[in-house]
Image (cartoon, rainbow, N blue to C red; front, side, top):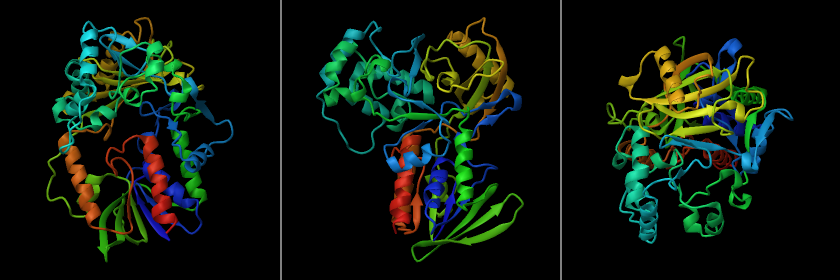
Amino acid sequence: MKTVIAGGGIAGLISALSLSLHQDQEVILIEKADHPGGLLKSFDYGEQGLFDHGAHNVCETGNTAIDKVIFDLLPKGGWDVLEKDKRDLAGIFYDGRLQLNTPYIDIRHKDQYKQYIADFFANIESTPSYNGPQNAYETIFQKFGESITQEVISPVVNKIYKKDIHDLDLLSILLTPLTRVNMFSSFLMEDLLHTKHLKNLLSFPEQRELPLQHSSGRRSLYPKNFGMQKVVDAIIKKLQENNVKILTNTGIKKITTQNQKISEVTIENAQGNIEQISLDYFVWSVGIPQLSFMLGLVNGKPDFDPPLKTIVTNLIVEKPIAMGDLYYLYCYDDGYHTFRVSNYANYCSTAKRSNGYPISIELLMEPTQVESPEKITEIAISELRKMQILQEDNRVNFGKTEILASGFPMPTLKNSLFINQKRKEIEKLDLQNLVLTGILSEPNLFFQTDIIRDTYEKMLDRIIQK
């Protein structure tokens, strides 16, 4: 049984890993970059060490089979295990203040607090309307009422995406913690957590004190030897041991279909060598728009809202930054390009370097705002100092900025409608040996944990058990 996998990001790697565990599978992984891994790869700065593409770890999926496969990738003691009250500590910079207690917006300090509560409870029994796709504004309004939607959530969403919230899809409020707000004390929330509807709307005010029976119970993992690249390398080593053929610097030029199946793919490597590969199954993990183009479902250039540029600035600073024990935080205030700040030393025991503490700042910019990497490094440092996360007496010993070719998506209604339409058109082709995996291969499928579980289960159901 021969399976060709397009794409060497996390979905492609998990597809290959899952299939390679079964001896009757011949697997070929095709990756256009010079190394698989996608955003899980690390930047290697030589003597300055590795840096990830922002905050990444491996969260257990709840599928014990694939969770064990991943855990066994590293030798015994090879993981820092983040669990219970330390599983995922996140915060936000909001209203000019660093919020350590919860990653959801805490409105208790707001002058309009009483009005927000009144609006929330006046709205709580409203009947949702599902007459076609909803924009992010409608979704939030049905959750929280007018005041919180207009005055709290909308400005944050507009800041992140540089788009009006009415033009954005539901996915835009799922990508960061915007589906709940914090209104009440721990004492009251311990009672409200037992009410399913309120639990889905309100956050617990102290993430470190959340009763564990109300948490997922799943652990997060990070390599004890710093760098998510270690996980990618371990997967590649396992694939090679299991005789998976990995073709890097190679792209798919053509997909040939016959009798409602994909019969072969034409590939081309960096030297211009072209090859046709016949196959039994074809796994696509590179994205719905690209596949719809390859299958002739897109004529000309699609009308697509382009994403903002995702930029990662990596720093080594002399002393720990002022983020408490947070692993990462989101910046919600207008006037900042900063989207997320990751403090590696708080969740990896070996992150600290001889010359200081590594941190990463992810920034989102309009293409017209992008300047030289050196200038963006200055901007990132100045924004951290403005937030007082990087104190004036904390010297920066190293800094380097990477402008990514791809990164954070643009979840507008237009883009979501296009992707959903093309996914349906691909399904109507009824290509019986095609398996879609990865980001948005299913509606609202985005987070790495869900992608790993979805990918593994598809390999099992669609290919291995056939």
